[in-house]
Image (cartoon, rainbow, N blue to C red; front, side, top):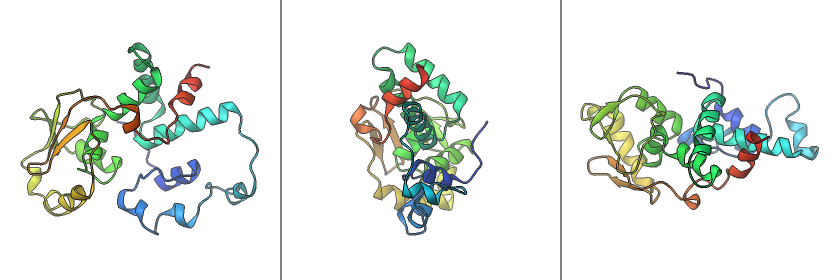
Length: 213
């Protein structure tokens, strides 16, 4: 299973905005975007004082890279999602975002059962979650309306799920397309998300233009 292993805070600095890849740290003064609000690298500081006008291709590339990094998906898999979105009825850009949102690791994060998508991916990989009562360990599993995500009974005895998770989950409000029950820590996918319920910083039209070149 391929994944990005480099420093994730550099990804936020490269995109020029917080992508909230580190969970709680992103909300504190320790976030590198607060201390170094410019692109990484030797010439990063100079980028603050004037940058060339971006070409259409550069804008499309940045939109695609931003979406990939938010969801923690590598290029090969992201391209497969785009091809799957093309085959569905409706708008390709919205279809792509709905595919990304329906990933199991993203649903776990949206439900408040993890502090970041990276943490959700790790917890799923270690087999702490079930889908419709069956243990799963594939973060990229795509969920459908009616699927129920829960925490394994054996995992609930661990300190993270007993102490850390409840405090974090209570502060998080899941989107309307998910129905969460904090009493038994389960969540149900009621429907596919609408565009207004998905990150507004993602420009799906530019992504479609990038792959349509």
